[in-house]
Amino acid sequence: MNAIRKAIVFGAAAIALGAGLPPSASADDLKVLTAGAYKQVVAAMAPQFEASTGHRIILENDTAGGVARRIEGGAAFDVAIMTPDLVARLVASRKADAASVVDLARVGIGAMVPAGAPKPDISTVEGLKRALLDARSVAYIDPAAGGSSGIYMAKLFQQWGIGDAIERKAVKVQGGYVGDHLLNNEATLGFQQVSEILAVKGVVFVGPLPAEIQNFTVYTAAIGAASKEQDAAQALLHLLAGPETARVLQERGMETVKP
Image 1 (cartoon, rainbow, N blue to C red):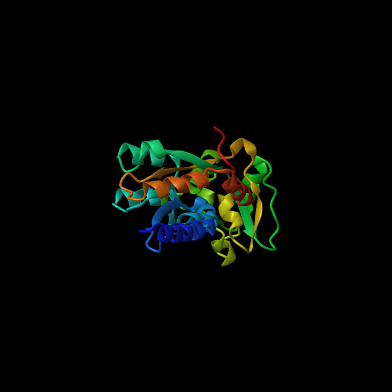
Image 2 (cartoon, rainbow, N blue to C red; image 1 turned 90 degrees about the vertical axis):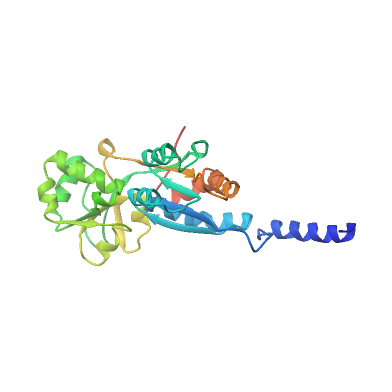
């Protein structure tokens, strides 16, 4: 390749990169498996990542337990985002690279009601118990599905001695947004991570659980040990752990994890 041709090729590549366009149309996809609460964050940052790297994100979500079961069943992935204990299991089974593990965010649990419904006072533990017992039906993620918010709420009901009362009117959601089940009138009160409540139009965020019983779920990421896109996966984790994503977290009811 002569000097003039080299200059043309390198100049075109520089223009493509400067414009945020992929230098090659053959860049491989990056498969990201994430727990539901963090899905909106990855989706919000995906355009920036794709424009700067040329890698297209293939985003799939489930409950944290559901993501773990998929991977244990042989599902391929480049990046997994789950709770710290489940990521540790991936590392122990050599399905994820230990050196890549990074905490990305944390989020608490909140309550919601359908738009137009009265907002119960859940600022105290007693107020929350009263709201639960007064509600016609209560929706939350089915603990058996592996959702961290549902597991915690079910334990809370049992500790308070109201487990049987809630069970009789419970709407146990297998995955996705609990808010959808308030929109179709299946339930009058719902609980889920705050980020997932804010993602549903038509429901009203009542507030977080009282501070003394709040439960934060941490979302941790790791790169798949078998990933063929290690550099791109690392670039995504760098973006997700950076200051630009921190602003997105705040908008979606989440927060960064302090070291």
